[in-house]
Length: 591
Image 1 (cartoon, rainbow, N blue to C red):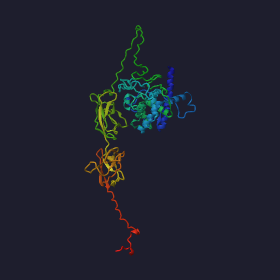
Image 2 (image 1 turned 90 degrees about the vertical axis):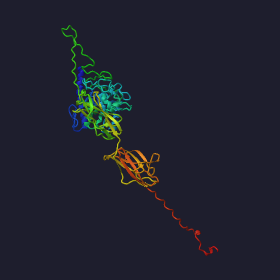
Image 3 (image 1 turned 180 degrees about the vertical axis):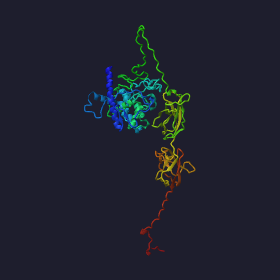
Image 4 (image 1 turned 180 degrees about the horizontal axis):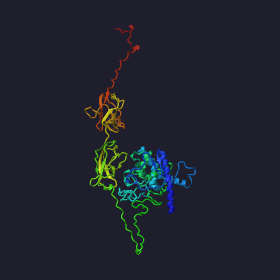
């Protein structure tokens, strides 16, 4: 035992130095002007402390994590640094199981396309995966990336951990009393419910699949428009995953280590982590499987009861059981006192496609007596067939009520899908009646159309118009992009019926058509119509353009008569002498 404690003390000293060196190196490369103390903790002007994040607002519920640190490895090792046990340890730790590594890189590629401003490095996912599950327990995954056995953290029952009562009826963690972090990236069920992604294209969102979990972690880290190439945003993102300064420093250490070089190793051969932040993880102990009890914390055997005390002197050697003192009652939290939610004066939720909703959802938490409850987390979830999101691109947002018991959701950003949907407000960690809010997205519209050119289009009968008609749509003075436009060659200004003569468009088969639908302005509100042709009818005609929102524009089209053919000239007199009349008297016919 003494030897074990001595090993832990020596390792603690070494790993502290590793953390300090790694975080210092990362700070120097990413945040000029930042300072790092002797414990490797960094401070910058914009991120000097951890955010005030509730346990169930983080990805992991602030569950325990592995505290093993990478071996000390300077950026410029000495020639002998790669030999011996130290070199073997660096090589082993730098190896990432093939399927796990592929999942991280695929997630980075997807986020580069979906959220290019986030600048997510796959090495950050690898660092978090190392700290959360030891790279899916050394890469023990199937060919599709699913862990061979489920990876679960301890139940979050408030006994040394956060208190998060069951939110998924045991669907993900097999526990119907309390939540547990699930999978290789250790998402708690309530977070996975909205953050989960399908990373391997099998149509499922499985927290036990490394492809799904890695992509979900990437989206989680990239929310709020964070730019992870900026040190301040990087720190905020990591702390939002698990709100611990020690966790931050551990992840940054592995991030720096992986940035210096990694290599692929076979699945199932990765190094297994040893030390966990709650000091319960032991070599050879795997986190609990669904339906089982997590490993007990030291001094608190799971399911055990106090052993009878030895016989007391003078009692005849009969064992006695010491009185059991019941634990003190846990005082109710603000969440426990919430009886219901009420609308806090939310106005009509309507916005045009592609625009931001002017009104924001506002909800009030109240006791049964109608008293406001502060410091309660309210989760707003978008429900229905919609591509609308909250600011930052997410479909779920959690907001804490203020002193008046009110939580105001982030602004809604309308997508392109029109129609009605709902915003559901609910209390995090408590089943009480929520509040649904109806919201509507209307089609993009324009309130004005104008001809782009100053010259009215014209051509000759039987010809084609040299220049296509170009128009610009606006809405309240701003360019109206992606607005649907209908173009019809009408009979007259007073008769909107389709004309049966005059200018026309051509369909895909080259046939004449005098009405077009499905036209749409570009992002700048401009639209160029297809080429116009004219039949043999001369005159003035009208092309009527209409949009959603009521904008109308009549464009006058002039068709000039075709030029009359030139008359044929008289034939020139002949110069052939044989055809000329004779003037010789001898050739005069006899009378």
